[in-house]
Amino acid sequence: MKQVYLDYQSAKPVDPRVVEGMARYFTEDFGNPSSLHKVGDVATDALEESRKKIAKYINADEDEIIFTSGATEAINLGIMGYAFRNKTKGNHIIISEVEHISIHNIAKYLEREGFQISKVPVDQYGMVDVGKIEQRIRDETILISVGMASNEIGTVQPINEIGKLAAERGIAFHTDAVAAEALLPIDVRKDNINLMALSSNDFYGPRGVGVMYMQKRYRVNPMIIGGGQERGLRSGSEDIPGIVGMSLATEIVQKEMDSEVKRLQGYRDRMIKQVLEEVPDSHLNGHPTNRLASNAHFRFDGIEGESILLSFKDLGVSVSTGSACTSKTLEPSHTLIATGLLHEEAHGSLQLTSGRFNTDDDIDKALEAVPNVVSRLRKLSPIYKSK
Ligand code: PMP
Image (tube, rainbow, N blue to C red; front, side, top):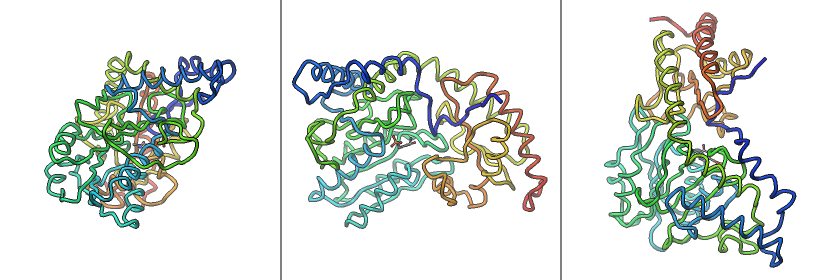
């Protein structure tokens, strides 16, 4: 059975053009940039060329790019590294209720280490109100962290206004930009971003590579100590094939994002319109318009997301109920709860995220399945009562 993949937010295939460009760095140009011979020089050139390309893509300078093993590590370095480095200036950090699980867990850890964390609530669409961030700022506030967009419900945050507020108040602004990669332009200067996490896979590059962007006059404590690579901020031999892959992936995104986003918006809008029309007691999660082009996220009264997912699995359609990073817990999504949903409402969710290699046929197949699956599960549901 041909599989239809509509879970691009959890994992993206690596673009074959990226794989091709990476290949020689495994076998021919395999050197270590720390070596002083010719083979090492080739690796150094590849590393610095990649750094330049990624910096250009986000409107940063080359020396503001630190390569990491992914966004989780970049977030640890950006938030925890900044907090420990600046703890004599203050111990208060502001995040939003709808951050990625890694940020919530870092916040918990920092609380145990004596930091104070304020979590800014969101509206019913998962949108942060900048005024509510402002109300929480204190003399001790050293950092504000709000993700560019939600990896679950796709709501895009007012990053430009948050960056402006942080800059006016002399507070560092960190953003997890992962969910927005390949879907929204990223410009660290325009949005006053001081620290940022990126993941290669969300640009259609290889997994296990990422970047922490850190603006020039900002400082963090390293989280990994060793041979002093990446200016002492991230020791360990650099993953040259992965880093080259990430830079090639951003180059493709730079060229193709506009047309790709238009195509994905078409898929998204069709899915939203058709599902809400065809399935009774169905609702859209996230913002109706201010949402990622790839993201359609629904909830259906009276049924469980897990049973929808398994029914789709039987039909050869891969979908998700929310973040892959928390899918093994039985807890409802913290993002959906933050938007005001009850536990049982949050449990009835279905996330469809499309991407570069989807076709019209994939969308047709998913759209054909949704009403059938929902109506069959509702017949079996002891809690569903049609209105
Ligand atoms: N932030 C967001 C919004 C994510 O979706 C993810 C997972 N892709 C991460 C951070 C963690 O990224 P990584 O898997 O590269 O560590």
